[in-house]
Each structure stands twice: as structure tokens, then as C-alpha cells.
Image (tube, rainbow, N blue to C red):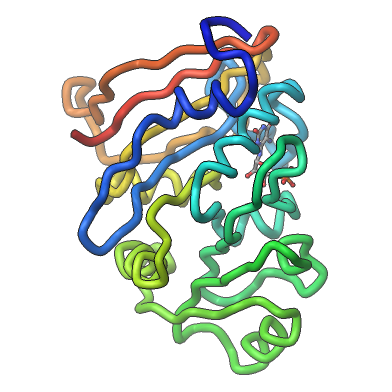
Length: 238
Ligand SMILES: Nc1c(N[C@@H]2O[C@H](COP(=O)(O)O)[C@@H](O)[C@H]2O)[nH]c(=O)[nH]c1=O
């Protein structure tokens, strides 16, 4: 690893930077891995693995710095992630799945703990799925529905009310895009892998931007390289 920081934990600390206190929501860090050409998965969804293993350790160290790690239900279903910090020392944060209809399968690794898991859902989830998820040992929090699925400010407010002051959001693209569009992201950390796959799943979707000058401005770059991967972080807000 380049620079003065040499462990996954110290690289993560520099990339994540300080947390800001917000009224009613946690500090939000987006962290994902992409190919050089901006893909977070191939057509069909395969994404294992884009990053080299030491870069994935940095991702786990970013998880360990946050109070919760958050994914959308599409990611929970497609990737079946564990969302723990097994590649670094430290405690695993709370795992959160944004799942408006509770479609996370019973056998999903994110439902086997520890660490604890909370699914944030809406009135659209059936009683049978609520029962199924509760039996699997995960918590359920209901928030209002929104056109994209879950009302994200309400979801973040629920986490904040439970003492969560920082979250790392890993994906998928729909959740990353919705948070950026709603101006709910404080920091963005992107691992760029030395690979080009062409057509695939793009990290960030439509933001309604038609002129480059209207794009989301990022500030204060922080750069590291890990083997041939490059990690870059920016402040999104402030
Ligand atoms: N593919 C990819 C990542 N993917 C993220 O990691 C999750 C899998 O976590 P786990 O099951 O705990 O290993 C997956 O659902 C997605 O959020 N992360 C990275 O640092 N690099 C990668 O190349």
C-alpha cells in the first residue's frame, strides 16, 4: 500500500475521514468496488471479485469503522453477502438490509448471526414474510414506502434513533444512486480494479443530470493504491 498508511485499518481511516453529526440521520459513507470502466458487476450480476484481496480487507476495515453496514435487498439476494469484518481485526457492525417487501431469502448469510441484522421494510411486506424473517432472528423496522421502494430519509432516521451515527452503504446501484440523488451521501469511497469488462452493471444510474456542470461535485480527494487497485475517496457534501 502506498502513502504513509500501511495497514488496511489505517488506509480505511484516511479514506473514510471524520464523521459529521447530522440531525436525524447518520453520517453516510458510500463504498463500492468497480472496474476501471465503472462496472460493479458483469451482465448477469457476477461481481466476485472485482477487488484484490488486500483491497477487500480495506473494505472490511471501512465496515469496522461504521456503526452499520447497509445493502439493498437486490444485493442481499444476488450476492448473498456476509457483511462482516472477517479480513481484519475488529468488531462487525450492525447489518442492515433495505428490503421494502422482505424478499431476503431465509437461508441468506446476512440472516445468520452474529452480528445482528435489521431489515428495513414497508407495509408492502406480507405477514408471512415478517414471521419468516423474525424466526430467522433478524429485526424488522417498518418505514413508509416511496416510489423506489423504501423512504430513505425515514430509514436513516430509524437507524439514527437507535444510536447509529455512521453507516457504510455498499450497494447496489439503485441504493447508491437513490442516496446520491437525495443528497444523503457524505463521503464516497471507490475501489478501482485493474480490469475492463465493457457492458455491465454501472455503479451509479440516472441522476437526471444533462450537463456535466450539473453533476454532483466532489471535494478533497484522498488516494491510495493497494497492489494494482486504486482507492479514491471524496467528500460529497460540505
Ligand atoms: N464485489 C466486491 C465487493 N462487494 C461487496 O461485498 C459484499 C460481499 O461481502 P462479504 O460476503 O462479506 O464478502 C457484496 O454484497 C458487496 O456489497 N466489495 C469489495 O470490496 N470488492 C469487490 O470486488
